[in-house]
Length: 476
Image 1 (tube, one colour):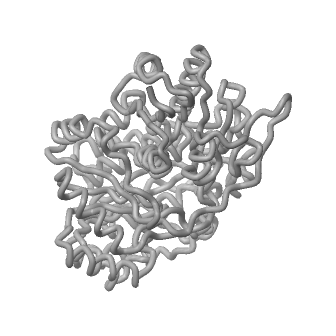
Image 2: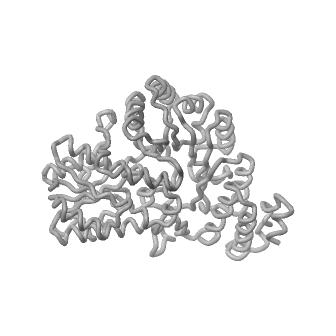
Image 3: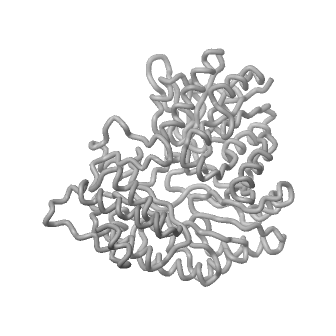
């Protein structure tokens, strides 16, 4: 038996794109929540739905562990949880039904649950944990009256009650290490080695992001940002290196290396402890200065993913991104000079973007030649100014079903099919393969001609394809 059964709804095989990528990471926030419960003497078990089918596996876990409380605790550090995918919600709702069938109380935590409290309560969850999860979870599992627990939402008689919000913790060094023993580490290792020939693990150095891009949803940490002490992060890196021998680390922070001073201290601590493991992380183009990149390289950084978003300054300004196109070029050169892979997140379909702005982004890519890209379309999520801007245009479908969906959920310049084709063409160009590239661009041109909302006299020619006679001929 266990006091609390923890689980999550991120099932790898429910997402076609993630099956293709095969880069599974353990549910880090779920494991941190488990460690926090253990510190208070609360026994914990875990049903890790990453590899195991939730429909049968979760019911079996209920029978095996006979918990007095179930928490569907999503990984706040995994971008898949932050995307609030429809399939993940379906899995969470099925877990609520299974728990209620056995008269076991169940609560939910995560971005989607925070945004859709009523839907989760209607689906059978007894409460929703909003904001930073550890303290709220400990109090709920410890038996405190629900009315006294900050950060909790639940149905009281016929109405939904939202308790006062939970204050965010500022001392992240006080958090325990994740409860790694609860997962089957070998299963993750085998999946990585079979697909890529190396094994990657995840960790975090901070929580939150202080920047205010108007499309970025932040239901857990808001616009706050708190970092762990550099020595603490380096020590955990050394611990993972010694205990699990990962070949690679993903720092899953929303934004890594925000402070140059912190980054230098982190690099010094990693070197002093011989804790280097090649890692990738996420940051902003304007933060990748020469000194910061040099420190990152000393610490073991091999790859940086940056939210470039667009090659159009007008679109960046409309997003409240706070960066300049020239920052993208500088970051690329600084990373190239230190032998660090530079990868861009791109976003298309933001209101006001026409083919002219798309061409500016493509030119920027061809000028900078990033090592890899991730392509998305603007995705309105509750709590953002962008959502308020386009919310009246949303139809019955307001969330993507999985991470490959790329559906335009509002009235954009082009169709969903166009943006999916554009993503395919850009990936083919960046990752190589001339024949597939030519075919992909031909599809983009076909859809651009048939799905644009602009009138014919105002549309530009598809000049971006004129990079070579062969490619031009293939789409003529």
